Length: 138
Image (cartoon, rainbow, N blue to C red; front, side):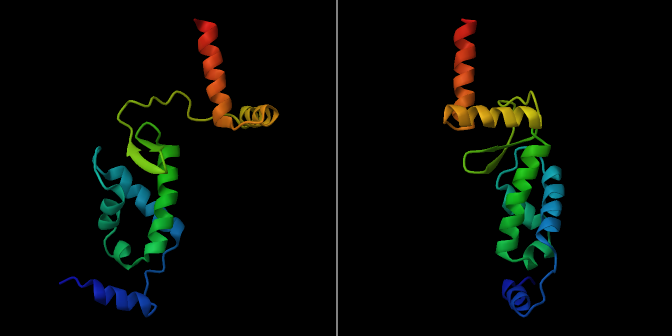
């Protein structure tokens, strides 16, 4: 029978799994890709599927690995996952189309330089560019 107290005592006595956050993140990403589309409570399901590794890892390690996993999943698999709002990972239901996965470093630098010249954030600058484009098209 499973007893969380036993694992807690073992963990505080120094018998942790000894796995780095990067390795935990890699394991989480592999499990995340295997979950059926539309699964709710992604983090809980992933930790459950990690088995003993997930149970023996500290909450701090799991949280840091989950934050890394969310960023990796959204960056490497944008057609499947979307990172929105306050860093919440969602399934991409098709409402967000990924037209360009990467922006070149040269264009990214130009965008940042232009935002500095205009004294605004890159997000506001892009909003202004889109509005200007739409006005010119109409």
